[in-house]
Length: 84
Image 1: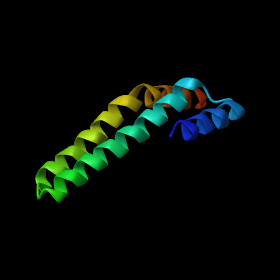
Image 2 (image 1 turned 90 degrees about the vertical axis):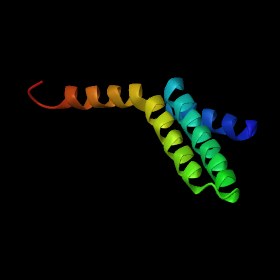
Image 3 (image 1 turned 180 degrees about the horizontal axis):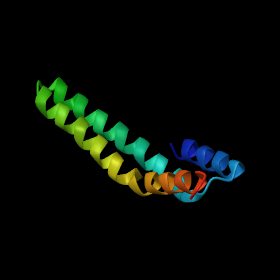
């Protein structure tokens, strides 16, 4: 796993991406895998309602995590619009 994360960071460095974006993407992917894993465990235990709630919780956490980046993206797009 460390080699995979290192490779992603190296590719991001070659592309000139800022570290905060790469770290946020890696965190979001980690949260997605963990929430899916927990949901699958709950489904295996026959707790389908709990599994659905775990998936929703993972999505909410990811949205909260990427909210600052989304705000910066929207601000950048608005700044590029003519007449602004």
